Amino acid sequence: MTRILVPYHLDEHLPDLDVPFRPDATITAELPAGDTWERMAELYRHVAEAVATDVRTGTAPVVQSGDCMVSLGTVAGVQQAGVSPSVVWFDAHGDVQTLETTTSGYLGGMPIRVLTGYRPELIAEPLGLQALAEEQVLLVDARDLDPPEAEFLASSPMTRCPVDDVSEAVIPAGPLVLHVDFDVVNPDQLPGTLFPTPGGPGIDAVMAAVARVLDTGRVVALSLGCTWHPGQGTADQISPHLESALAPGR
Image (cartoon, rainbow, N blue to C red):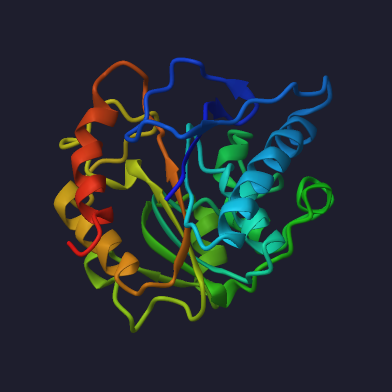
């Protein structure tokens, strides 16, 4: 299992980002002077190449980054390797905003919409990312939704469930990209996250659910949203839980 570090938040380089796993490879890139979408597309092309190389050899890469948008590169890389994945997405937030619905303008709130075909000219087409059907996405927790997100999910065939309900019954069919944004954990147990959302499951419950997804044997890539302030020990707190979940034959 190759552990890849992408030390960025969107197109901002974060050289001090601390992550749960010591990386086997670190991806950086000379980004163009264009807009944020163009810059992310260039960065994620490198991510996709690294992921595709691993998946072709039967290795499941672990991509660690400072946001959730890097999952676009991870999924694109899996597709480049000839695998058509579904996605299991752990997050305190919905991540189904659009440029038309967001009030903050934060692009990091849009990755699931982009993955499922929203305005492909922005980044999917330059990246070579093929849209997933909404039925191919399981959204876990998402306890903090803006009204437009709640409205979208109410009419979407996308499956959503609490952490404790993650099971084979709701996990999508086929190969899986597993994405975990650690702000899904109750911030009382995991301080230092960028966008803390009160309440929510404890770290043991989250990692037990993550382990159930891994136990399917269908995870071809793991994407970790290390969405925290560097230097507060959050990565060190997460690391033993992840090591345990990923341990062979645990």
